[in-house]
Length: 308
Image 1: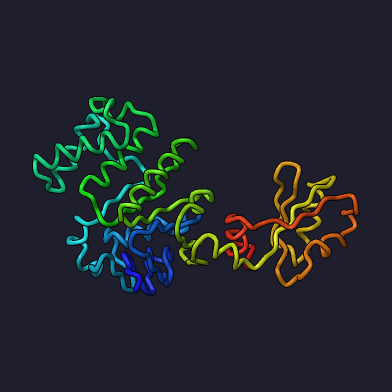
Image 2: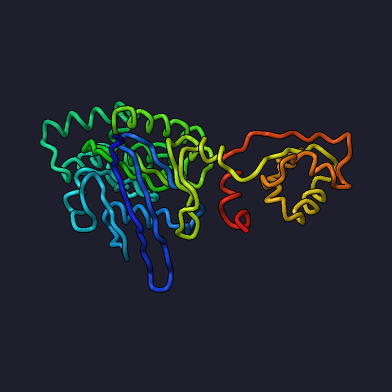
């Protein structure tokens, strides 16, 4: 039987009239990387703060690593790591001083502290930066330091709130390799993101919109179960064609990618290419190709106008 690191049932959180999280059901398996995907303001940070015990729910049940929240929040704290969206370590301390400070907070003995700090400096390529002030580091270096700080006490469960929003693509890729290393060692990770390519790296994810879970499952499951077919069109006058196709109720969305138009057609249409060929702006010389859905396509179909 699959063991769960996180289980939430009908979890809700209101701020006055704002319903930040609405009836969220969630199951995160131990050792997995689980993602929250959604735009800013969709409830990702609020959900993480509820699951770490930093916020009290308006209603619902939360169980994290066997602890009932918010009642057991203090007991849970030593078993989790939390990397916030904004760099939250001390700019006026060196890399090593920051890590030593965190180690003391988590109660590591002097011997264990020294070994663990040196280990993390080596793992995250910070050994040559040990005596550099954190405030003078690059975005990618600060990100690696923040991750090292979040796992200094070797937590069972790691929460990451949009951890790569301020770094370049190469650093993002390296950061995800480090997450897979942690997952391989048994750490459960919950990460929030608005990047589609990052969400596709997760074992499972939930798509959030306005505090509501619109879909969840593995990226492949979500793409397989999408309620649309994707057709790419190479033709003239793509800008005008896009506007024309969007007037069809069967067309969920149309977006230009370079010299191609990517069109999502509701799967009630059994022959999407033949359906689109009926449009007078498309002729026999134009190129229409049925293509594999992407996670971005899934996101479009289950949020906003895609559900109307």
